[in-house]
Length: 417
Image (tube, rainbow, N blue to C red):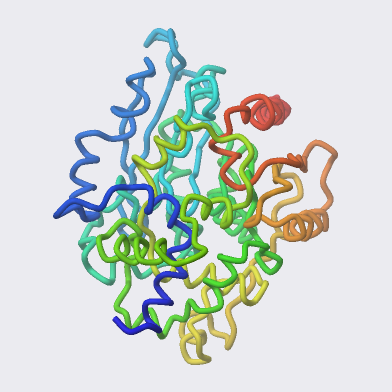
């Protein structure tokens, strides 16, 4: 591999280098496909719910474009009987962020993780897993080894994955409207879907909680993420043949090992350098993270996020030339998502952190100004600011239960009347 191509891959890897570097080298055959097979036998229910005494169900839903997604349902809290499990309960759908999966919501103890806390507080909890993650790698006609399988960005997560999952949960929960909670990329796909005013989504939701909200990335303060965007060119990735970006593969692990040996590079601090200085992680949650993450995503998805950083716009994927954009959108440039178009009566809870270098404070303020353009009652738009939180704290901090999740659930209660 040439020096130029090595730089391109390594810079992109910096987003997940802290996790990858801390792992042992992959074993032979330790590919995404083999991890998918292992996951079927030891999925989220088996590994994270059952050991703590929670009932848990495995579900699947198929998207309009053929992806078969995994869902986990925790219908009851600890100690509840089967008879009182989920009947009449308000459902909550949890959506993870980039290069994560549904384990995001169960990484800490039952008193600290949002998935457990919601179940213990009487909610019917549903946990989504984005296409391409270890639990959602099937398709009706494509194998995950096919390049065509990875021909998507977060546009498709908003237009296909989210509606399919929401409709499935709505039907399974007795046509009960649900609350939605997203973290990071999980907030972006919700904002995109809501701004398109997808009635099938809006009409089935009670509210949305957005943790570390991502909509605009023009002021992103992470030097590593910005450097990645500056060199993450679609042409270079095409030349490298990377349709799937899997940070756990042997080739990437070797690159990470090489870069970690360079003078001045401290891999154990790269997570903080990328996400911000997380205040409140403990060793047990970090170990769970390292056992399950990071997950694969589409290279096209990474390009789309890089376009947002470089351009400062919230827009659909840019195909790089007038012809490609005309073919997909009927116009020379990608259409923007207008978050001001989110229905004015739809309740939103945003929680952002003062140390978050991905969900930057300036970009969050820009999002809030855009949302405020539609008339909203006082309890329909709530913005919380946690001064010492960075990006990972919102799903991994030991004190997130009292500082973020309790206010979030209080917000939910306002919109269940």
